[in-house]
Length: 141
Image (cartoon, rainbow, N blue to C red; front, side):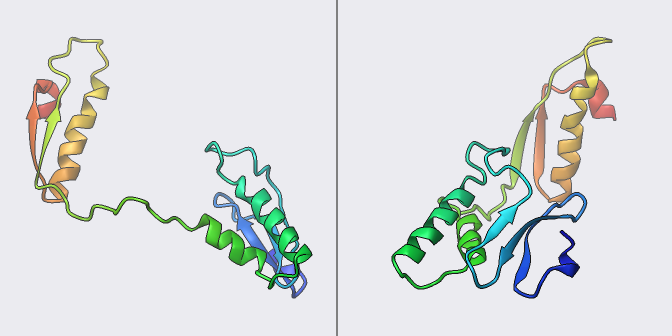
């Protein structure tokens, strides 16, 4: 469905982040919505299972003559992330990094390269690092 050609009472609900295609529509007044993907097929165990819950809540509210809450508002409320544990905003001052130790030829030294990348990234953040048991070739990189 081309978002630019939708009727006035319809709007985009989901957009594909890869190609910006429309993957869901919602009516702005009536409790109608649809998606072009399988909500039960997700990356997480219950990722978008809430679509079914929102649908059932809307039907129950309609049957019980409760005030109308738009599908879009219900979904926004459901999908808004609220951390249960406060987010730590204080950065550490020092970090200990454990290296892989000496490697012989053919022992996948490229994996140890991540240690030097970590040191560079932490240095950019003004965090002191201490590397223990490094592969000398990685330290020289």
